[in-house]
Length: 210
View (cartoon, rainbow, N blue to C red):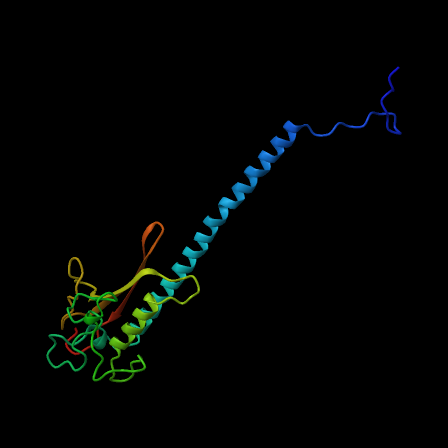
């Protein structure tokens, strides 16, 4: 005669445990959930990195714009071709008149009347070369904070606001009344080339401007 199954004090049979199939299903669900969360971390890190790069590029563009706007307009545009104009021959339009790029520092304007060491213009001193050189170092350098701009470049153009040259260029003459300054910082990320562009205008007050 077999023994009757043991019962709990309540008179009910003890609950059966999980079957192997149930354990495998639970493990599979947990694995999928963990993998889903893990896959979100790289995306989040990329977004943080991208946000830091945009912040840095915007800050560098603002820095250069403020450096340029702190100069008199007749220094910003330069005196090339203007009779009686006293100041740097080439302003931020560069020696070739088509703008400057951190990729071609040889086209940076010369400081005037001599080389600057502080990079800060004052009075009748133009420190465009020193400012652009410092800006180039800031763009291409690695601050060690994860915000390095991969293949970062900066460009500046100065044009006649009312009569810009098609496709760019200086187009600044003695009759220019308003200067348009455009500063761009660009770099590479996982999706391609990224630019940050700022534009500002200043009245042209140099000798010969209307």
